[in-house]
Amino acid sequence: MSYRRVVKLVCGIAGGAAVLVSAATAAESLGYLGDKSLSERLKIWTGFAVLQAAQPPTWALGNHTVASSGNGWDTNWDKRDPSSFVNVKKKDTATDDPNSETESNKPKATRNIFLIRHSQYNLNGNGDKEKTLTLLGREQAELTGQRLADLGLKYNVLVHSTMTRATETANIISKHLPGVELVSCDLLREGAPIEPVPAVSHWKPEAAYHEDGARIEAAFRHYVHRADAKQKEDSYEIIVCHANVIRYFVCRALQFPPEGWLRMGLNNGSITWITVRPSGRVGLRTLGDSGFMPPDKLTRT
Image (tube, rainbow, N blue to C red; front, side, top):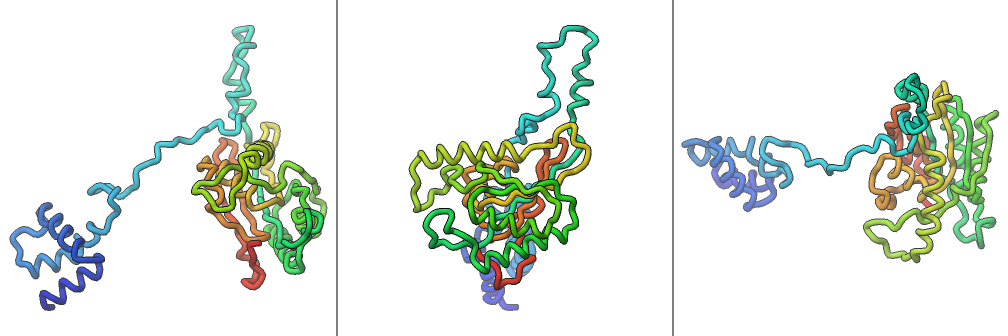
């Protein structure tokens, strides 16, 4: 291969002549090229230094990991760590054993929380009562209900927001899960949990975040936490609510910055599955899963 063709090939791979020069210099300074001829140097360079030059600037030589953010995991994020139930101040005798009490307060079961976004609804309705599910929305709810039933899990409860679109979605899903208790909750209504970052064009007054945020945070604390020590078996709970609420829950549960909630998108009728282990560790099994729906049934309204 001629010199000119080699240079063109290398520049094409690396993304430009500037990268060509810097990578060649780096490789030579590291002693990888030695006293070899230019053509021999370019052959070696195409196999090694191009990759070296293409690495992100935050990667140091020999270190192929991005630096940690430095933010640790709060093991008592839900204020239900077993040790937090021991009141040391009330210990009156030497026979009381804090370790024994801590052990008795340890959860033994895993909580599985299914967060379902409501189905498509009529955006042109005047007020909540007129914002009922569309025909497609009702089909979506049927598909979601069937999917939950197909998982073959023993569901403990089906909780839903009191807004019309969430209530109708829950009622349709409930038909596929006979015997599962249906409960409504005002805390789960849609709202603006926290001012998003980066900022968005549709402005809301601080009062909206102040009021909605407190309510949605209260909903998170009520529904997302590790199991009670008395719970012996794993639980499976369904919550039908809204996109903003679900996205905020996910950020909070994973201890991600809550202001990043708007960076995620959820389809109507989608399933988000969170697990909370006895240790307090949280896992995200699925986020906005709607793969069980045909493509022509997918919407995000």
